[in-house]
Length: 207
Image (tube, rainbow, N blue to C red; front, side):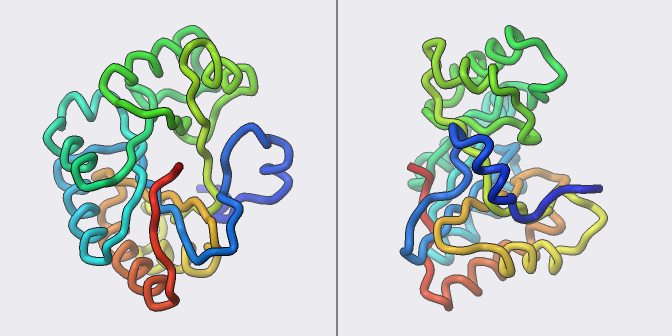
């Protein structure tokens, strides 16, 4: 499975209309969790974040919010931010623009947020324009560092090292609160939080 752990500066330069990282010199990181809420993975994440007084942003799938609303409510009540991740985890490169935007609108009925992250990071320039306008007015949030926790071919230790070696002040870091990612997430997340906490970092929500 090929993917880039660290987003190249050229990609950020080519698509400046998307948020890749936060420009800051402060020791702050932005943890994000995609694909939840999940009845097992999300509570684990919330409990682990709480142990380090860390806040994060959860990019939620609309149908998962519908099916796990109590868990979603716990995310919001815990002082975390939420974002729209479509209703059905759609790949923007494989569906029509009309269906993609309608799916985002459907998710917005479940998710109260002005933030949006495209599943797989796959979204066209035109779709981004529609997402930012067309009455949606959403900020498109990408990432600076991928943990790789979705990759069954690597270990939890590798996921932790992906983040520890590549995160810098202002990095937007992707984990997943999903059943697929959980075995690696359970190992990596506490170690990432511990390492950066010891370095004097704080973990904040996306603006």
